[in-house]
Image 1 (cartoon, rainbow, N blue to C red):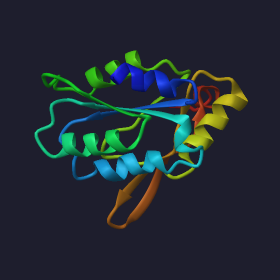
Image 2: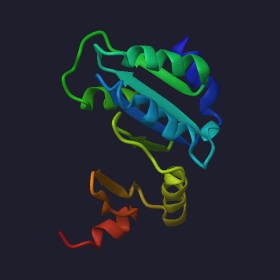
Image 3: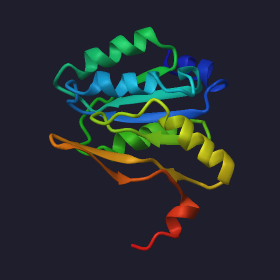
Image 4: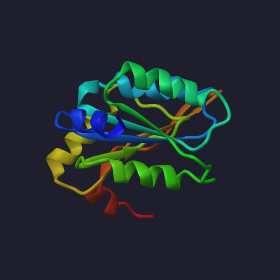
Length: 158
């Protein structure tokens, strides 16, 4: 069933989003909803959520979204890997799209995040692009990184 669902949506999608999930029920809905509400259109997204044996309500949240959206794939690992790299690697193996991005389960995207990143990749022909990162604090927000293509990033002094 998983592979049927993957194959049905691959032809239309442009971007694979991979979220490793471990005990993230406090933030998970906000994260998933930020992907669903992207200005590029959710039909252009293949969303892989890899649950690393969460013990909270993450599994139930993933199953809820999986049942509502054809392009959300929920994968449940049999034993905890202890690090997010394993779920990310599984997501990479399951994706067949040209563009892959990782989104942690306690992060979220601005509504035009994928549109800016996708357009930057298409315009520059670069291999990767880095998104804007904003840190939220009780005193407000602070931009800690800007959208950059790999060519722009190579020109930045450390």
